[in-house]
Amino acid sequence: MPAGCLLTATSFTRYGQEAAPRTPWPLRPAGFISLMALLQVIHIALRPVLTPVVGTDDVDQVFFSQFLAAGYSYEIPPLYTWLMWIVTQVLGPTVLAVGIVKYSIVFLIHLFTYLGARKIIADPRLQVAAGLSPMTLYPIGWRLHEADAYGVLSAACMMALVWAVLAVMQDRRLVRYIAVGLTLGAGLLASGYFGIGALALLLALLFVAEGRRTLLHWGFPVAIVVAALVVLPWGLWILDQGQAFWDRAYQVLTEGRTAANMPPGYHRLFKVIESFVLAAFPFWVIFPTIFFYVLRRLPESAKGWGGRFLWSYFALALLGFLLLVFFAPVPSINAFRVYPAVLPLVLLFFWRLERFGVQRRAIRWTWLVFSILVIVVIQARFMHIEAGPAYCKVCRMQAPYPDVAALLRQEGYDGKGTVIAGDNYVAGNVRVNFPEARVITSRFPEVDPPADDGKGSCLVLWHDDMRDNDRKRFLAFVAEHGIVLPPMEEIPLRIVEVRHTPRISMPNRTIQMRYFLAPQPTPGCG
Image 1 (cartoon, one colour):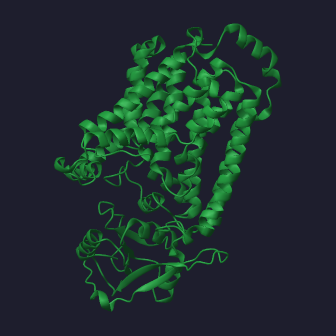
Image 2 (spheres, rainbow, N blue to C red; image 1 turned 60 degrees about the horizontal axis):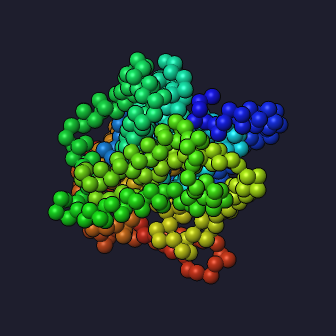
Image 3 (cartoon, rainbow, N blue to C red; image 1 turned 90 degrees about the vertical axis):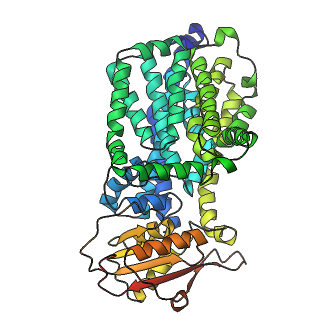
């Protein structure tokens, strides 16, 4: 056992002799994995029960997964779409498929956090607490239920890389280096911001003796080659796209700003610090409150390579995001881009906690907090759908797209041919409701699913309250596909209610849609 994992060899022997044979089943690997899998199965089962609508980020993935390709959007790496495509081949473009992909990835976040904890923490109670702790980060504990796909996958890849790096530091076999390469490559295919955390993790190896030996081993170049091979198909696709890819990537990074209207330096500095604080909330409130004694200075005799490695990682990750906003054309950062890089710090907290020792009353409070969180989140998912439309702004998860689809069927649309969607929310939900249709959208004009013979239906569908720039782009996209729309006042406005629970005495919100079913045949569309 590495020296950094233990307070003293004597204390570990005493714990191992007295507690290990009586370790309760939930604190064993099989128990943790089984209970975490059960929790995610519950969330998967709730997904189609609560709402038939696909929300933020998930709409993109349902839309992209119409076909298999090395790349799709100029804005988003393809790994999540590949996973979605595999599942939709079995289940179709359904809400259930969306839930299976997302909550399987959430399971992997908890699993790799737990496995990483097992590499540097000896106490099974703290291993399990660390494995459960991602649910105390707001982006993972709540927001992923209503939005976010790319950060979730990036977080899973980040913790998988942490586990692989900790494993190879302790056992420099070739298979361990291959695992490092696979997780590194997968992360680069998950999110562009993953690279900052990954680079910080690899550079942190320089600050501990075990890490330097890991970098100097002949297996490390093998890991880099494996990662390059994983990323190669997407890299070749990027080359094939030419300058259009880089122009769009630059526009996304800069948020359309120029050097003249970039935010001042103090604002960018504040946004990075704020993002780290919000990304770890409420973890940094809950556990330092329960285990307040961990905030003391760690005695020299209790320090080890695990702490040095993770502290170095934290400093380098923070520095990486600061350099990004100061020297790259990135105007700001937010917690949802940062949290995959923040997540490994939960291991640092529990590593320190083991150095100080675990008080029995405090660990009981920990189990109570986790139990309350699970119950509250499940209950809140129901409240979010039932009561949300009375208070939400855009009501993404409650928008009545199934009602819109039923209206279209009543008025003659056969569910086939091509649908030109006004935005990605329409595109993703149209595909859920009309799985046989080919869907394209001006939001992602570079994504062009294979067309049929051009003799099918051609439906144009959009929100009436589009922003001016989005409307101009959409109308130009429609014209490019050979569709001549009638004057807007001649296209009927369809108003559909966003219903909420009748127990709330507030008026229903509405969405306003327009559609045009082009006369057949329309070679540029159907």
